[in-house]
Length: 292
Image (cartoon, rainbow, N blue to C red; front, side):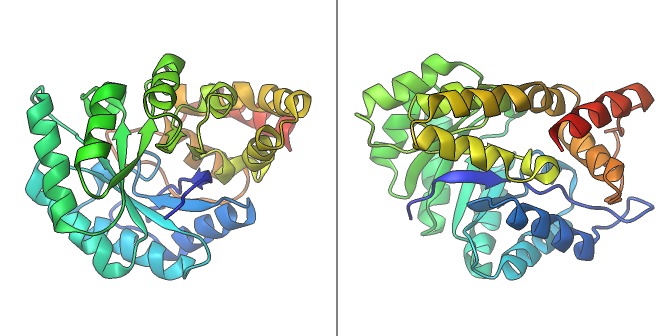
C-alpha cells in the first residue's frame, strides 16, 4: 500500500457525562476530515484519546471508523499498548474489521531495550498481514528509537514498511532519507515542522489540524509537492502558530475546544485531561478566526 499525503486524526466524541463514546458525532468528525480532503484517516491516535478508552470503546471506535469511511480513503488504526499481547489482540482486530494499516508505538512503563522493541514489532507483524507504520513518539510513549534502528526493523520485519517520526528533530528525517536512499516512506508527526519535513522528503503529514482548519494542511502539502516554494511558505506561516498551539495546549483538549468554538459540541476530553480554560479558548478562537 502506497500511503501518502495528509493523514487526518479524528478526536473521539464522548457523551455529555463522559462515560461513553458518541458514535454519531464521530461520524460527523470523520465527515469534517473527508471534506478537508485528507488522504487517509488514522483513528485512535493521541487526538483520539486512545489511551483513555476501554477495550470495548476502542473496538467500537475502530470498527465504526472503518465502516463509516467505507473505503473512500485508507484507514490506519493506532496501537500503543503496554503489553505485546494486547497489541497483537488489537492488530488482529484491525485486520478483522478491514483496516488498511496499523500505526504501532512501543508504549512502555519500563525502559525497553532494542531487543525488546524489536520483538514487540516482530510479534505483532507475525500476527497480522497489515502494513505497519513504525511510530516514534518518545514524548508520549516513553520510548525513543533511532533512525538506524527503525530502518533495521523495516529491513528485518516483514510487514514493517513505513515510519512516522515525531521527535521534532529534523536531522532524524534527513537520516531516514539518506540511510534508506529515499526508499523508505516516512511521515511527519510534528505539526510545527511540517514545511521542513515535507521538504526533507516526508511522503506525508499526520495531523489533527484538518479537524478545525479544513483543507489548509492539504494545500500546504500540495504546494510543496508542486515545488511552489513561495506558496508553501506562505501557507505554512499562516498556519504555524495554530499548528504549534494545538499541540502545546494539549491536542485532544484543543481540538475538542475548537470544535465547540465552531458550534459542534464533541464533549470534553476524558479526565484527568481537562478542556481548555477561558483564556486558552479565547486565544484559540482568535487563531481560528484568522484562518477562516
